[in-house]
Image: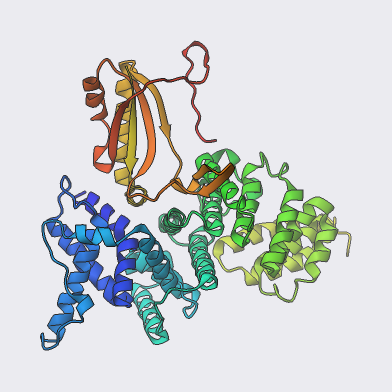
Length: 423
Length: 130
C-alpha cells in the first residue's frame, strides 16, 4: 500500500494537531481545512527515512500557515493579519521554534477542549458521535454513514448542522474552573462510551464497520488516559470498553444472531483485553472516587472473571448495581439488578422489583423479555407469552425479534403440552 | 554477553497503525524470534501493557507516594524489551536489524546482572497476561 506509513502518522497526529489549530482559530471548520492543507503538504514533502523531528508540531505550523495564507487571499491583502496570526518563520526545521512553546500541558488541554467541543451538550447525541468520528478520529463521511446505515448525504447534513449549531452557540474558549473541567471529562467520557456502544450493541450493518466504531472509541479513550492518567473515570471508561470488547468474537454466531452472555463460549474471550481492563480498573479505584463508568467497568470485570455463567459472583453484582442505582439511577440499571436478584432470590423477588419499572420501561423490549423469562420460570406461561408479545412489539432490530420469536415458539410448545399453572 | 534490546515507540502511532502495518510489524518480530531461537541467543521477550495502566511509586519525606501514569509524558514510550545472548555488540546490532525499526527506536544495552525465575529443564516460562 503506497504511503501507508504516512497515513498512519497523520492519523496518529490528528487529534493533537486539530486540537492546537482549533485553539488557534477558535473554529472547528477552519481547523479542519487547515489540517487538510497540512496533510497535503506532508504528502508532498515527507520521506519515510527523514521525517520531521516532531511531526505533530510540523503539522500544526503548516496548518497555521495555510490558514493564514487563505485568510490573506480572502482579504486581498488590504488588511494585515492580526499580529498573532503572523506566519512563523519556515527554516529547515520550522517546528523547532514551536516545539519549545508546545509543552505537553498545552496539548492535554487542547485535546480535551476539542473533544468537549465535538461532544458539546448543545448537540444531539447522534451529532456528537458523528462529529467526534469525523473531526477527531478522522473517518470519512462515507465511513461514518455506513456505520450508521444511512445515506452519505444524510450524514453530511447531520455533520453540517452540528457544526452550525456549534457556531451559533458561540462557545467560549477560556479555561474552565475545576468544576467545569470535571464536567468536560464526564461529557467526553460519556460520549466516547456512547460511540463504543454504537458499535457494540447494534446488531445490524457490516460487522467490520461496527468493529471500527469500537476500536475508534478505544483509541480515543487510550489517548485520553495517556494525557490524563490521574482521572479515574477516564481509566474506568477505557477499562469498561476493553472488558466489553474482550467478548467481541463470542457475541454473534455465524448467521449473525446474538449470543447471550449465558451462552457465550468464554474460552473465546480476549484474555489480554481482560487483563488490561482489570488492572486499569484497579488503578482507577485506588483513587477512591468511584464514578458510574468505574462501577460499570467493575460489573463487566465481574462477568469477565467468572469461569462460567453459573459461577458468576451475583452478590458482588448486586452490590455494584446498588452502587450504580445511587450514583446514576436509571430504570435500566434497576432492570439489570432485577436479573441479578432473580439469580440470588428467585424469579418472584425479581418480578416484584420489575413492577415498579413498568411505566418508565413500557417501550423497552428488554424489560418485557426479562419479565417474560421470570414469569415463565414461575410457570405463568400465558402471562409470559403476553410479555414476549410486548417485547416483540418494541424490539428495535431483526436480530432481537428473531431471538424473542424463538422464545415464543418454545413457550408456545410448552403451553400446548398443558403445563401452564395460571390458566 | 547478555544484551537488553529496549524498544521505544509512540503509542499514538501504534494505536493508529492499519491492520496491514500491524501484520508487517509482527512479521519482523517473528523473524527476530526465529533467528534468536535458532541461533540459541534468545533469552527473554517482554511486551508491556499501555502506559495508561502504569503507576509511579515515589518516596517523599518518608511517605510512599503513588502517582498515576508513567513518570513523564514523552513523545515515545517504553514498549518492551528482549534479552539476547550474543558473542559481541556487533552481533547484537546485526540481530536488532531484524526488528521493525521504522516504527520505533531500539536501544541496545549490555546487561550487568540477570536472574530469571526458576524453570525446570529448559522449559520456557511464558506469561501471557491471562
